[in-house]
Image 1 (cartoon, rainbow, N blue to C red):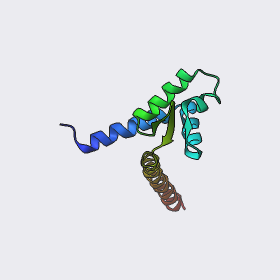
Image 2 (cartoon, rainbow, N blue to C red; image 1 turned 135 degrees about the vertical axis):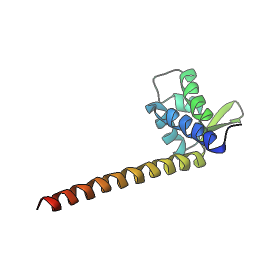
Image 3 (cartoon, helix red, strand yellow; image 1 turned 30 degrees about the vertical axis):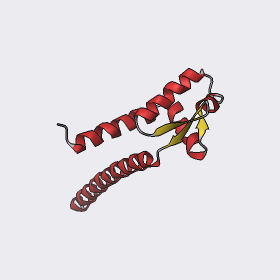
Image 4 (tube, helix red, strand yellow; image 1 turned 60 degrees about the horizontal axis):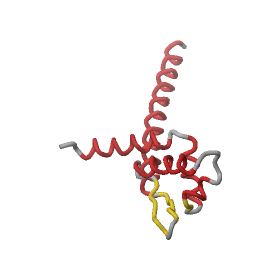
Length: 116
């Protein structure tokens, strides 16, 4: 059985892959402001409703967006817990890289001091 960490890694991987596409990032931004139907989303893109549905399906599989049927419309809304997960991951990566850059700066400063 796979561990919880591996499952979380898979979830984060799916989220990152889903958000790697410009159209999907735009869909997330728009749906964060206002819940929209797939057809309302499609009106803003030069692609078919089916094309937008595929983008929304990728976001849905990644857990970033969910849909709710209201009458005949499928209304998309953002799962904020998923957005917080991505933000947390990016924050951890930023902290890691800032620490590495700070260490390089310290090493260069030490080297410069030793040369004097």
